Image (cartoon, rainbow, N blue to C red; front, side, top):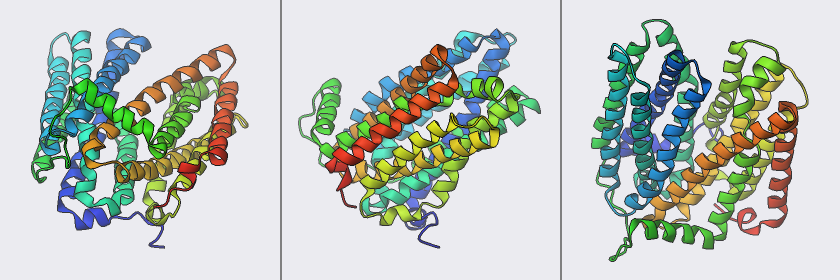
Length: 407
């Protein structure tokens, strides 16, 4: 059984990784709380779902831009310092949310400003954390570290929003912001315990940031394995991201209340958490590329299956399977990217991966929404899930670099 249980050896063997993991877990948990709190506050102030959508955009756009810069900086300067600087800025962002809530008349523009600053800070820190992982745990433990990171993200995705809702319904919105700020203040303390993490093998003459980013992109494009990992993930997120349709699916198709929609949103995180807890086998996979292809095929099949039966338990099962498949794919992809990228390019590879994930998910949600508007949600799931399954099957047939890569 130990082969299938979550491998916690990186936590046992690396004191530095324990501190980094604590910082990451705290950040993921409070980010979920913060988004729920800010969304509820905005909707109460405006009564507009478009205003809430604007909150997501005000975080996502600066995050994508900052990811490009953060990837380059992660390959040039001490990654510990970069994480410390960006987390300190994030503290300022959360403080703005709290200060605005304490005002006699909170303002909408201050919420958007705080979200913009927070998104940019996250875009700087994520590549630094990802590129620092091999130095913290060793390349032989990358799959285990990726599984632990995925677990913290999924648990945060389940607990954070639910906890925020309970706090706002009880002590209130301001108290929720206070809890978030208190948790965010702990992250610089954890990060200060890390050793210096300078990139290895840096070039003596470093190009400008834009040219350095292009250098990283060019390296990825010339490597068949890295290029394949990027493309197969885009296949899944662009064609078969169903999250934007869940409110419509819960209220209009299933004809249930908002509590059912909440369950639909939680189901992928539940499946992902269960898979992360049983991910010990991923470190012994001989041909990880084949498992990545199979996971993407399962993702597409799960979204396709949503269209086959209009019943809440079936929908929850399909979404949980999608979340589980996504976790397997992420664990193995992260380990391969970090293992097959030189240390002085890890920051840029991490930023490219996160950028395509953020933009691909946004495009995927949009295309699902458009197809649903033209037809209906059932047809959108049918087309998107089926197309994802077929294209990932083509990867299994044609892509040799991904199929034959060995761990």
